[in-house]
Every structure is written in C-alpha cells, then in structure tokens.
Length: 367
Image 1 (cartoon, rainbow, N blue to C red):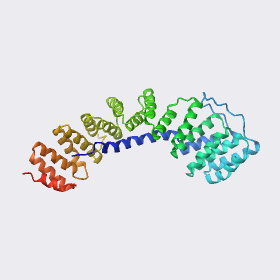
Image 2: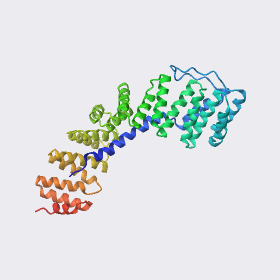
Image 3: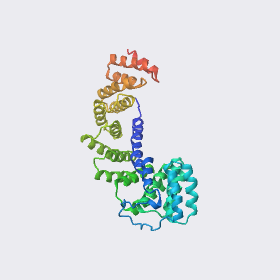
Image 4: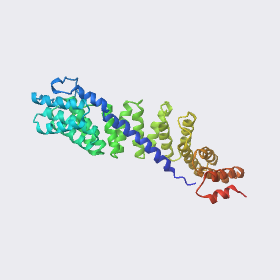
C-alpha cells in the first residue's frame, strides 16, 4: 500500500495551474471580433475621431503627425481589406507601404493592421514583428499606441517569449501609470508562466487583497503558491473561501483537498473537504474522486487509523477502473482481523484486475 502521495496532487495542481493561463492571457488578447470593431473606429486617418483618453496618466506626449493626403488613400484601402477580412491582400499592401513611407502615423497605422492580419493568418512571429514596428514608428495616439503595446505583450506570450513579454508589459505599465487590475493580472500570469512563481503569487495576493471576492484572482493566487510548494498559504486562502461559501466548482474543491494532502497530518481535513464536495454533488463520482479517496485512505493507514483507511478505500474501490483499491482494502481488513470482509474485498480485486494476483488470491482464501 505504497500509493504515491504526490501522484494525484501533481495532476490536480496541473489542472489548477492551467487556470492561470485562461484568465490572465485571455485578458491580454482581445477577442478577434472585439479587436476588429476597435480597429474599425480608427479605420481611416481622414475620419479618425478623438477618443477619451484610456490612459490619462501616460507620460508619452501624443504625436501631432497625421496622414498625408496621398497616404490617406492607401490607409483607406488597407482598412477596407481589413473590414473584408482580406488579410492576404492587406499584408501585401500594408507592409510595403509601411516600409516605404516616412510618415510616422502612416507607418504605425499600417504596421498595426499588418500585425492583426498576421495574427489572423496564424503567423504569430510576424504579428509580433509588426506590432513592434508599429510601436517603434511612434506615430499613433496614446490609446492606439498602448493598445498595440499590450497586444505585443500578448503576442510575445503566445510565442512563449516570457521575458520579452514581461519587458513589454513593464514598459506599458511604467508609461501609462495604470493600476488597472486586468493589466496587473496579465503581469502576474506572465511571471507565473516564466516560472517566477514567488513574484507571481505576491502580485496575485496584492490584487486579491483589493478584490477579495474575485475567484479568478483567488485561484490564480492559489495555483502560483502551490507551484512554489507553499501549500499552507494556499490552503489558508481556500479554507477561508470555503467558510464564506465561495467554493462552488470541482476544480476549487480539488485545489483545496490536494493542497491539504500535501501538508503533513492534514489528511482528515482533506477528507472532510472531499466528503463535503461529494455530498454537494460538486465532486462527481468518477475515477478522480476515487483517486482522492484512495490517497486519503493511504495516509490514514500510515497514521494507524485503520477504520478511516477502510472507510475511504471502500469509497474509492467502486470508482476505480482496476482492483487495486479493493486489494488495499483487503489488506486493511487483514490488519483488522476481519476475515469475511477481507475475503470479499480480495475477490472484488480479482474481478476488476490487479497487478499482484498472487497476493489477491492469498487474501481471498484466508486460513
């Protein structure tokens, strides 16, 4: 009965940690249709309207340069190609134009749309190149310039260029002076992806303190703490959330019980969490739940609590695809001197299949 204690919890942690990527990076990358709608608002230089400043504390001085009369026509053609989702045609026109023009606004605008078109055609490397070129041209208004910069950070993250993405986002934060939680969440997510979990968990924790009801922030904070093996801190956050009735999803219960199972002598708390989740129907009766019960049973056995070990192996066994939990249950009954229960459990183990059939056969025929 040497079920590895960390085997289940590693898988659970991966599931929890995956949650980081979704909220953090989904916030960084605008949905394609939303991005398309935003770009339509500034489609042609001649028709550009002044938006309210999205980054009123930005240190950058907005350029005064606007498109030339000749350039406006080309930008309108590029914008039309964008509206028609003709990305190949857009790239064929926008890139040579951007390379040739000396007008900063025209260059930045053309590269901006080229970057989006490249992303739409799944050329992420080119998209990052063109976003960077749009920033370097330094010709857009602040709203557009910093949207491009945040998109560059997102694109670099898609390329798993974590250091470059963090550097871009740090520049964005320094220049805009924004304290918008979504951008700080972006940074925390990037830090986590880069393996800088201590920094990520600290930033997530700061955000969570300001937004205690935000479950995305809660789970991201927990995930980064768990990745750093700081289970006690992660468990405290989740136990507090449990008391407030905030745990409503299976991944949240899994995060809590996996964390408790990684803390010494916390298997009873983990068992209570599992029991609560199962009773509420949040934790479905499947093999994942069976594995959780089995690990609780294993830890109970080594804590010399044979009654608890028997209880949780009995709960685990019917949910498992093989007979190993039944065999372990038979071993527990053997230790308790319960021959009839031992025989029945061993017979069930043989029916479902186990690696050590000889041992199961021996336990199925007690003397």
